[in-house]
Image 1 (cartoon, rainbow over the protein chains, first blue to last red):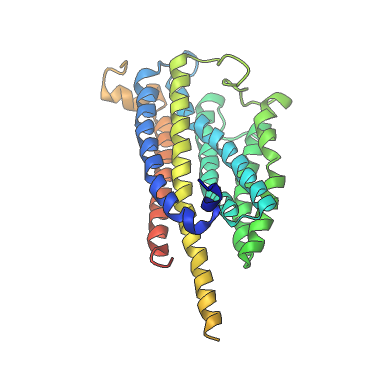
Image 2 (image 1 turned 135 degrees about the horizontal axis):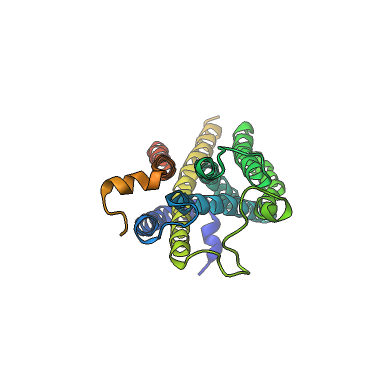
Length: 243
Length: 48
């Protein structure tokens, strides 16, 4: 099987269209399961009462906000090194979804912070760097639409994504490096999770659901981007031929 | 199931306002994104 075939927007277009519904379907099913665990199986937290249930959307959204930026940076590297149009499009297709998750992480965090900390917002390192991430997403999208030449916009935003990805580890490690009001990681790769199993299970299922949603939505947006861009090419070709 | 009644469930131990806005806003954002994409998709169809 020739995998390079799929790096062409024209051949990937129908593939994206046929894959997207499956990802979105799985996302929906896992979301229902995750919400069931979040509201009916997970016990009340002995310190935070029922307000802690916000973490079932807050943590997965925050994780996605960081993951998506790293993946955009990854596609940018592929695009810059192989000069493949589809890689740039992949990065571009992910940006709005990443921005939405960043927004949700900030707002749900705020909604948790008010009853727990007594403040909607504090300028601690975690919150501030996450807010910067939102600005980076917006900046990425604004930069792409500001440049008329799409190929140039692709390369410029790829470099931008690559350089600004340095903010992601800063967000992740902010709770270690600085004295933050935001609590440290409850789930990490190196230590046993500091929470009940069923809570962890709910959070992981919600995270996988958000993952599937992100892939499905990115594929749909990729189709839109391909259709909109190739239309211009066809239009250009026809215009040039008629001269 | 430890809620007992629908009122208890909606009250969320007094944190209902924060909990329901969090979950509601998340769902609303995701559905809104899907809706917007669907519209953009329809507009971009037929041109390729």
